[in-house]
Image (cartoon, rainbow, N blue to C red; front, side):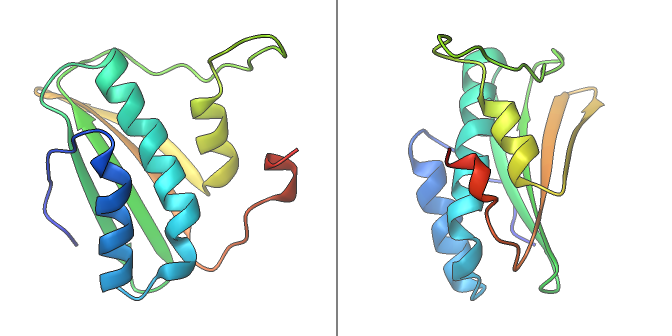
Length: 127
């Protein structure tokens, strides 16, 4: 488990890459960096300070990415239209992770995403 840190965009992707390298989990870097960047972007754009990032590892089976912020607004999974410029972030998170969700406490909320280690990226995500 790594302690919570305050991500500063765009350093969150580098922080994830470095921690995964420390843990010997190079194969999980692409999906993890993408998921974290989407969740950090949402926290910065729609949440409230402070924003923090935490990674938890479950003995080579699961990686959990947690992004916390001081807001209490629930994220909404949307299906963006072909012409929409936004609205795809949580959809990508849902497609690339085993599970994701939100938990609330007095200080705000935490969006978490569980990434199965050793899973391949679905080909239709690229289409």
